[in-house]
View 1 (spheres, rainbow, N blue to C red):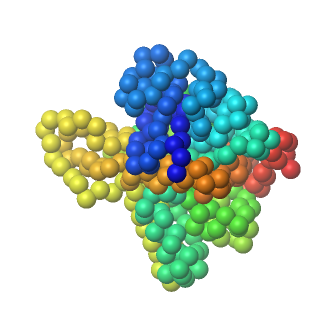
View 2: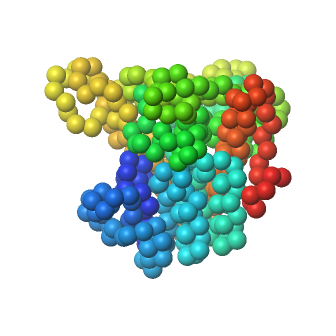
Length: 352
């Protein structure tokens, strides 16, 4: 159980979640960090006891860094993975892996050629309810799984880069349905390929600030004909929605990641209540231990233990590439109005 020095790339919202997810892992700590803005990365370093450095390359080249965690905006993922691979460092990258399948394939090529550890940071499949749902399905509790549904929504992203089409690469579909797509693969089994996708998406509310879709629906059809549905929104008021439903021949399992037994009516703000909460007074529903509830604790524990043991983590860049390929087909379907085949790019970046 040797110490693992983490190089954290990103000092924003998700970077803090990933860092908090390390708090119970003995011997794992952030030793160096970088993020946009000197003041912000220095504040991050002061909070978590790491050394703020001046660039992505500086973090990746730091001799005290064993594992690089990429918690950056989408347009910086490829650059960060390239630097980590060039410096021979293990790397874990937040979802979505790339802005599209070709970027994801290039990242997979880089880590394979460098022979370094790689993990895909998809937290939803690590929340306790999702793990239990999968265990019950695998135990046959609801018979053969027939359909799976995911509903995720909030009133819009918290950072400007999400709204920029060139930087983000996609809107609500890429941002949120990436969760549901991987959750569906976990429930149906990753050995069952996704055959094709049908999708709709449009800019219904936020046209004044983006050309990206702020609402979308995606159906993914597996090779055996079974279907999973993702319904996502950037215009859903009332706080974060994150519900997942599995239906089988002998029953159903329904979970709501954000449901909380804690509720309060307050006349004065009480500080941070939870991700994407729209109101800070009146009836509010604070999320206790949010890092655990969202799966970040279990996800980071799996990544660090896999890195230490020299084994493959539960989620790898291969999984991230499949998810990006599913979403590429969804965007093609929005344009064509038809079912579009899922084509996974090869690790050289060329289409297979």
